Every structure is written in structure tokens, then in C-alpha cells.
Length: 133
Image 1: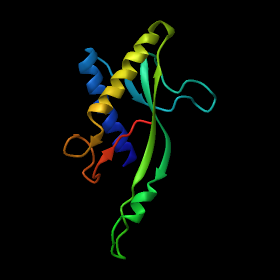
Image 2: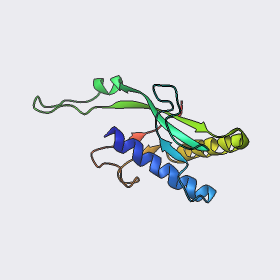
Image 3: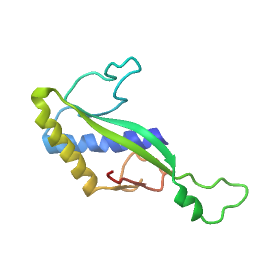
């Protein structure tokens, strides 16, 4: 489920970047930033990188989840913390700000994702809400 959420949202962001900046290639990739040996974990530069940096259970929902039958498990509510980083060469450092600003704009215009408004999102997911921290 986590993979579906992250890949689907990032595909939408790449489509947004392609249209906004008239690009022929994706600028956002999903990856860790560094390998265990300290080397860069992905190829290329002049990209944004999305990394999952933390997962926690949403504790507030546990108190308001309503009654569930003893035969079914209650739904799981998670907070996924994603880090969007700009990895641009020093010659293109201003481009990093352009893409980061566009990313913020993307989430300002669409902060709630559902299977109805986001093709490719699993129908098992009720909704995903993004909050900029």
C-alpha cells in the first residue's frame, strides 16, 4: 500500500512538472539519498528526490475509530513523512528553487488524494492528505 501511494503521487507530480516546464523526462524520482557506503544512491543530477524518512501510526484515529466487530481488524491510519530534496548541480542551483517552489504549489492546489481524483491510487485507500511540514 505504501508503495502504491508514493509512486502514484510522484507520478502525478512528474506529470505536473512535465506540463508546467515543458519537459520530456521525469524530474522527480523516489530513492534514498545515500547508500550505506556514503555514495549518492541514484544516477544523474538536476532532479528532485522523494525519500520516505519516517512512518508512524496515527494515534488520534484509534480513539475515534468507532466500534468494530471482533472478527475484523480496525483500519490502520499511518503518517508517512516524505522528504523532497533537490539535487542540482551548482550551475543549476536556481533551478532547484524553481522546482521546489512548483512542488509546494502542487501540494497547495491538491492536498487530498482519493481513488476518484487520482488515477492509479488503490481503491482500498479512502484518502491521502498531505500536510507541508
